[in-house]
Image (cartoon, rainbow, N blue to C red):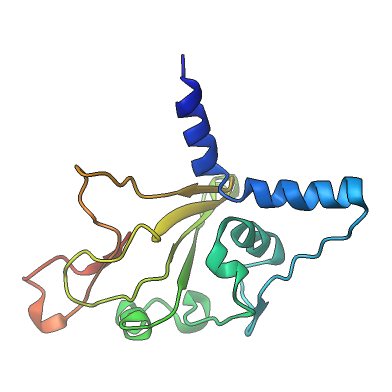
Length: 178
């Protein structure tokens, strides 16, 4: 049996902006006020991010709620996969960053999924973990869910990781992580 406090903690963690959605709902339903969400404008068309996905991200992320535009920095479809180019684009970037990744099962389209990550911390190409508890991962489809880092006195603060220096490959694993 789950205690009430565990249930409330879990509910708060999973539905971080539920109170805002309920406020909008009750304002519209009982006070006859219309409520309009102002989704950020995408400066370039996205092959992956549609309005429905953007709305889900908007409702669960206060940083996205406070921006008017979102800029596409890299697209595998447009540029092909090039990890060095991804690192060049994101290293030392001083703005929140949203990653979206689509996995397609070649044998069964029903097993395709979209997932991603968000961080508002600067990416450092230095083979050390960095970032803050504002970095998290999420799934978009088949179901939407945020996965926030577990933080307490006993856990390491491994929020995000970036390392790509060709002549220093033996220092640490090359990669990007959350």
